Image (cartoon, rainbow, N blue to C red; front, side):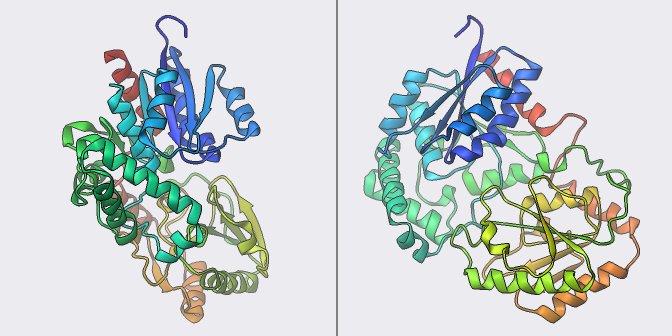
Length: 402
């Protein structure tokens, strides 16, 4: 490594996730400062195409993938060989926390960058653990190892994580040593999330920095302007989540809802734009009887339909019209609920049709758009700089102190 160049290690559970937050944040660090090199560590395999995609944008990237040993000591050995000046994670899953414990044992500063929510809205069912037996055993190994390496002991660590991931307890109340399993610095979306991370994860207020959310980059929440003034009357956007893919919703329930939605869109000769999640199962949509298109980027639309994905807020760049779909057992958080013109039960075809029709024929409501943007601004911070640039600045300032 060149003298003066600082190495940052980004950790993700899936190789495919490297091309999102880790790469976007690396790009900002590279373009703003240039004196940073990057290593990407994954709990599993990194496909060669992903390596090529990253190397096209970063000329100083290294890659490392874990062994099958799901332990803190395995990560400690790998991180010790990589020798980064900082470790960055994007969630508080078991592998993330194992990485944090390992990095802290090595005296390496750690940063967490908020990326979605995992507690309390991401509870898993018991059936999911049996259906993914190998992964369950690996994660049990992580839990025991984290417990052994952070203080409570192996069995206590395992029981604590059962409380968190199966019963929805937060990390702060699960009996784990907060200083060992949380990052030194916590980068969040806005002021609301400062309190959230204090309450749910036990972070101290001094450790938290607000950097905004990528979902609102380029959106002026104090304006009534929209980003696309073209005709959007026949375009309806459904924002997908991985409820079925993660084992949190029966496939038949989702397919029934999607078929009802497609039928309504078809009656208008409209186009259904499906904003995919990176892990979306496209086979869920193969029988839809309407004109539809998959979208990797967030599309402009007349009406947005979704559940409780944070990216729904991006719809305020184009429209004030939202229909939220409520699945039993899946509480819609307040910061998404405030977007809704209508909230419809997933199996209520009649109410879904009426909600979409009512919004389809209604005039654009500038006052409602302004009010929703105002409400959202208390949850998500925006500025002239992108959220990744703001995060990069915070990370680089910490590197300078190293």
